[in-house]
Length: 298
Image 1 (cartoon, rainbow, N blue to C red):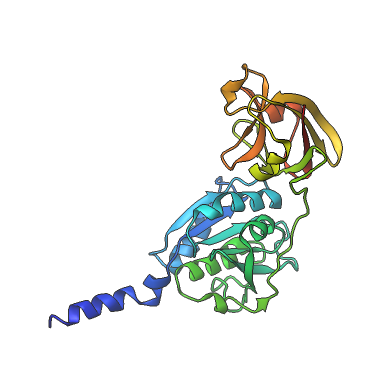
Image 2 (cartoon, rainbow, N blue to C red; image 1 turned 45 degrees about the vertical axis):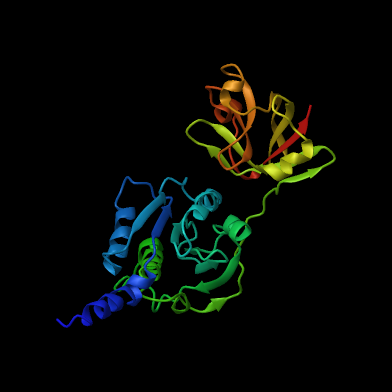
């Protein structure tokens, strides 16, 4: 082989569309792992490109819980590099008129999902730069046209894998739509007249801690110091479920075992817990857009 040919071959290898464009594919569903549904999705993706890197976000979203799917996406997506393709399938409306879309964010991430509210928090936190409706004539697993109830395998995994593997560019997904997505309404974090209001988007499911969307900047309105006490009200559909007081501390050990506390979680949002106990179970608290919280300084 002539010496000048080797660098040329190397350059051609690294600048083929597949190697230049291939990105991670991250899967999220409410399927669980008790059957073969997730494995089937991965098989479809692997069939598109055996080189593709496939990861799991979670497959334990509670059945039909679109809100929790929305939260888990925004909890994790920012930690993945630009270009990552997320496939999220929590789709109680499968086979209905809801649109199947790929959304590109202003951060350069891609989300393949039904447009049913799943992108509510991604739209707020990352911004939507473009949305395309999936053209199922071109972007559907060959031979699956008679299947109507497994779009996660036949449409979303297939389209997401083709996009992540560099088999097709974003503009080949399908027709361009307005850069908007369906959003689920919920209580934003607000501060007025010494009271902060917010939402309970999720629970720390392993321990029963109650997480809110009240961030550091909003919390500054109360001028809290560690050791100060908070009045806390938790409501479901505007009906009080819990009312109490607790100290604002840095760690769980800041109170005696079994006592309530307020702290900042790993996302730096205000949260409530019982030291060595389950706050949510003890007080029958859940999460979602209909759950709200009000706090004030004692």
